[in-house]
Amino acid sequence: MFARTKVLNRPISVREGDTHDVPNGDTGDVAQEPHAGDDRARLILPQLQLDDLLTELQARLETARSTRDRVHALLEAVVSIGGELDLETVLRRIIEAATTLVDAHYGALGVISEEGERLVQFITVGVTDEQIAAIEHWPHGHGILGLLIKEPHALRLANLSQHRESYGFPDNHPPMRTFLGVPIRVRDEVFGNLYLTEKAGGGEFEEEDQIVVTALATAAGVAIENARLYEETRRRERWLEASAEISTALLSGTGLHEVTSLLAQRARQVADAALATVAVVDEAAGEFQVVAADGDDAARLRGLRVPLDRSIAGRAYREGVALRLADGGAAASEAGLPTQLPVGPLLTVPLGVGESARGVISVINPPGGAVFSEGTQRLLEAFTGQAAVALELAERRRDFERLALLEDRDRIAKDLHDTVIQRLFATAMTLMSAIKITQKRDVAVRVQQAVDDLDDTIRQIRSSIFALQAPAEEESLRSRVHAVVDAASENLGFAPSVRLDGLLDTGVDEHVGEHVLAVVREALSNVARHAGASEASVVIDVGDELKLRVEDDGVGIPKGGRRSGLRNLRERAEGLGGSFTTRARSGGGTVLLWRVPLKDA
Image 1 (tube, helix red, strand yellow):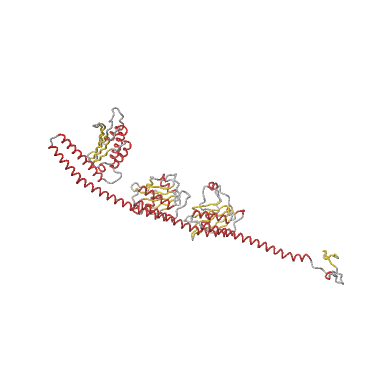
Image 2 (tube, one colour):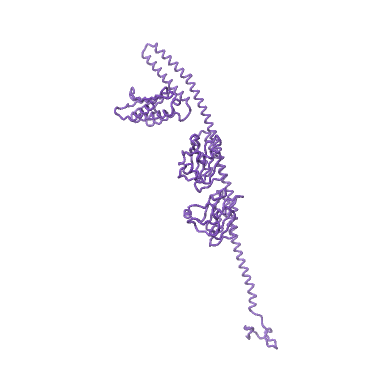
């Protein structure tokens, strides 16, 4: 049986026979039994402490697991960026890995210029194409971004807008509050900065985030250095290949136009530029002429003339040094380049040095494009220097070949004059003597015909001698007359015969020569349109005066026909103090005779 009593106002249970529940005699008081709640407290307290320890252990395990996952992700990112050698791909992977590691919504990597003053490249993650188009332009390195350029240390901000260096955002820029910036170093050089904003969940970037991104930036510096070395190696290979190709083309006799076009193409590739030009100097006119261009808008520049004293190219040419501009827009405007041509970073290198300089090679990127580095400048200088040497050697070889050709032609002319003509002349004299002693008329006629043929042959040989002794220039009057006759052959349907006697190239000035070309062109055009001829001849004889005769075997000049073309020929002759006549040719056809006096006659 249990009896219930009350101790300290609390009910307890006492069982008969239990000694610790027996009253103590005199006082009638009852001894208190130990409190049951205290026993339970003593049992529960260790259990609560154990739960706390287990909870703490579980939290630490979660932290360790999270750290392990983050380290694993970091290692994966390092391996990913370290296994790529293309610089653009490396930079893209770096910023993608950084945003993933710290759960940032937006990320960017800004490449700093060699001067260390501004951003020359900006790669983003998390910004859509529509947002990019709305922003219109990337930052140049002011405000918070500029602070990291001036003070390359990690920077964490809870609110971008509250920092003293904050410039705010341009219109249509996505809202950004939290910020983490970490510099990327390549050896002792600050290559650029990582910019991360808007941590997922709205929280702030923590110290662990900064540590992880700093570690990634360290590995990124190594990867960037490897990519840059690889890129420089590839550029050197392209430079060596291009130099060998240019030298081979020049020394194998390839035309100068083809070589300059190849020079522009290879210069653009060596410099990784959007556009390259080759400009040759014309000291007499005080201008550059763009003889070759390759790349964007190249067609607008070919043949363009640029003032020597008002252009960056002129300064590079005069001083004999390469000039590099981060923004060549003002220089292009001053030189008078087409306003439609977008000019950003510009590098101009002289083609040769000192008196052997021939012009300049320029490479151009559009506004906002990559600025040409010092390494690119050195490569282009080496390439241009070697090309200039090859051009000099090729010109010396052409001079030697031209001299050898002139000597050979002079020898042939002397042989013709001293041997062939003398023999022909002697034969003609013998035949002339035979005419006097012959009794039969038909024999005399035949001999006279032979004498006339010999005279004609002598004139043709003399014409050949004059041609051989004339300067070996492509633009001589003699060669231009042949070019006009050759061009008329297509319309005529046959090739006219041509005979040019006398000092056509040295005795006829440029003004009269232009009229001669026009008369030959007009006369042959008339033959092609109206004569219906099957053969024609052009004879030019230069002595005290210039006589031009064009004959054909066509239908002749009809009476009452249009004579506007003939009137032009007459006006040209009269304008030079000469005359122009036409007559019917025996056997059918027409003879045009155009004569003008020469100034030195």
